[in-house]
Image (spheres, protein in one colour):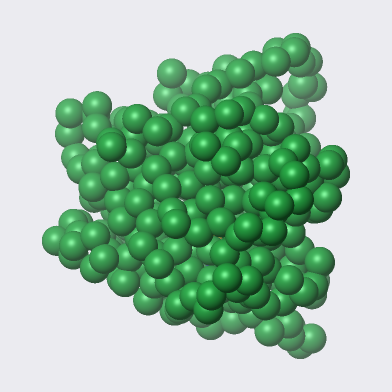
Length: 375
Ligand SMILES: C[S@@+](CC[C@H](N)C(=O)[O-])C[C@H]1O[C@@H](n2cnc3c(N)ncnc32)[C@H](O)[C@@H]1O
């Protein structure tokens, strides 16, 4: 069956829109160096390889002043809830009691889910008839281990989503090699690439195992994928080989994301679509510190500079942070002043789909997002 047909997503705009957002009144002469704040001694929940926390000061990527943005702010569309009922081999079966029950191809998996405050809908037998359970530290950033109640399973298994093959993977830190809440962004991006009528250049920052990069390249884009983790870059290559997609035009770059975009800006390189999904805290391969609350304004500022004149989108996701989507929404609108278009922001949610993958249940919020689009 065509995997894309399985994608059930919709955009809802509940409640009030255009809530009065006061102009933040950034002075026009705000070219300024931002002082480095001390880094938080924690790793991100979705960083596949949380770096060892160092007590000593680590280098940050080279800095540059923020550019003073003038002109009209882009139009706004808020709040937008981008909802997925799953796609291809993935759906969320049920959630509750601080856990989620998910289907990844042949395997049913139970993992901790702090936001599932309610009671599960399915009986306890459904939760016990599973292939893998992540146990251990209930702290989002904590380690733990996988338990396989039926039979010992290998580290990886094949999965298919949005037309590409890749490996599901039992990693430490509870991750399975793909973040399915991103399906809505990837579907949007695939659509843009397919209907562009020209080869688009896509930049995937903090790209992890490369599923988004493979989706973009398979749709016809030239892709640049950046991630700090050597291990994750190794996994991207395994994924590319699994789908026999070695010939697709993808540059896999193991580098600090900030350093990379600064260099692209200096070189005058541009991209038509930029996806950026930064963790709250991370490290580049040489120990460069990434701290979302410290570095996101500059990251978006640089991303704006490397958007091509005919760019189709700058897509930001943020997770595991204490913030409203309005904080990234207003930052995006300020950053994109004078560039026209619109900024749409809200939450990414996954809707439970039951054992059959077709029965909608409760919605599980996963992350905040904000994206600039030219129209
Ligand atoms: C949650 S993952 C992104 C997931 C990805 N968007 C996806 O859905 O497949 C965060 C990634 O950021 C990477 N990372 C952390 N700090 C980084 C840095 N300073 N520069 C580049 N990548 C970094 C981690 O290695 C990890 O793969």
